[in-house]
Length: 286
Image (tube, rainbow, N blue to C red):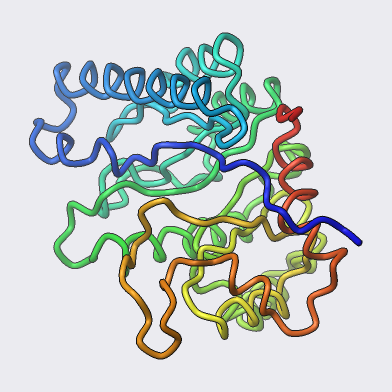
């Protein structure tokens, strides 16, 4: 029987860990940029320490020192340090360093290409994950996060990014935001825009995680997205920390949803728990 034990956790620090200071520092100031570089390096060093202390529990994924308006190429030295010197296997990429104001070019713009070239060279994927929201119109975990997941997917759909970078890989968290629920809309948009079918256009490069907080949501994800494109994910401190009164279980106990998924084979469970992560994060050798 196929094993269903998840891999060790990918230990990463989202931009949210550094976002409070981003609201306090003046935008585009030298102090701000220096602080972001220092903060990212410090967080990554702490991640490295945690992974060395608990190597059977954590695998390192790094934060990038992103700042509003600063070219992503400035992040390359820290990415190289984390991968080559510290053994990290991936990175977290914020598509909106402005914190909800969306002032940077889309992820498919050539502005991002130097970073993508380095990611391909190093064989590391990126999880697309925003930081805290500085826009009062967008609640951070209830709107801003899911908006970004959905926005990133649509940006990928309308571009030829993966023609330029055939081996570049992204993980979209939170089950892909609104994408699985509106899969028919995206298939139709691709068709209207004369784009290839989504499976051909995106599913060789774009993957989704299982940070979805109810059984029907996971069931939908599994019905719409191929098992080959789903990676198991849970959260140490999730967006919702309480107990669901309808089930008596924690909302963010995502493994329970996978185990209870109707019709999910042992083969597909193994892909979701382990096989896909090894494929998407090829530097992981454990």
